[in-house]
Amino acid sequence: MYRVLVAIDTNDERAEAVARAVADLPGDPESVEVILLNVFEDFHGTDEGRQISSSDIYDPESFPESVDAASEILADAGRDSERRRDHGEPAEQIIEAAAEVDADLIALSGRRRSPAGKALFGSVTQSVLLSAERPVLVAME
Image (cartoon, rainbow, N blue to C red):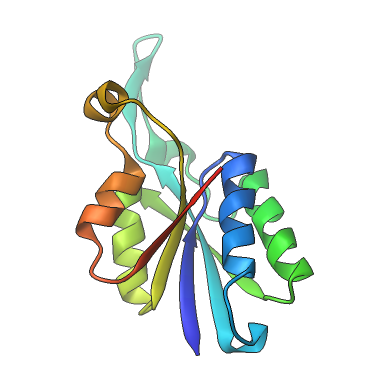
């Protein structure tokens, strides 16, 4: 069984792009196990003087519509998928989840960003590419 961890954020176009790439993987769809991972990003802040944290509103059962879109594309291609939702820093959670499920491949979607944008805001895709100890497939929207 070939196991693919597919990281899905909240963007429908990126979710669809990576789902199409995974749907197009060669081989029998029955021999590929797909895990769709959505990471609810950790944050802390204030709202009208009140401290708020992502853990206060994190719901492990509440998946964004982008996960539904990816799941539908995979199902149409004959590939079953399961869903997983984690909470924390996205790149770290993707790497940890891949290790936990012993993924043979990490698939995620990238987006075009300027060098300055990457330096200022970082890049989940870049972090995963640099940290992963397994193959990574990057599908562009």
